[in-house]
Length: 108
Image (cartoon, rainbow, N blue to C red):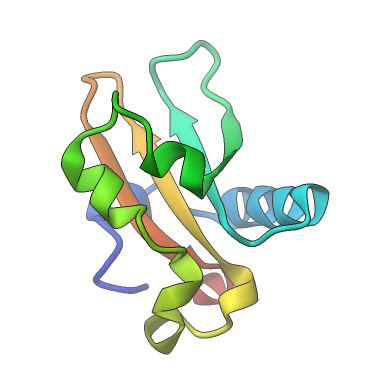
């Protein structure tokens, strides 16, 4: 795994997340997506959102908006194939949020 992914996200990241991201990329016909898992929801479910929409969202912290200002695929030198890259945001029950750029090939 990459050091760019916070530990709390690494604990959750598995094939279910990457399979969801790849299906969403095919469905929306774009690789420029953010996968969101919000544990404040019951039940917590994965959602796919356009990166540009979240990057402009005022309710997100400046830190998150800055991270999302570029597609995860721009980090391909670090993560490998850009077609398998996506941002992953996890919002925990304590309202703390973590974000990291993920590449599906990292789980292989």
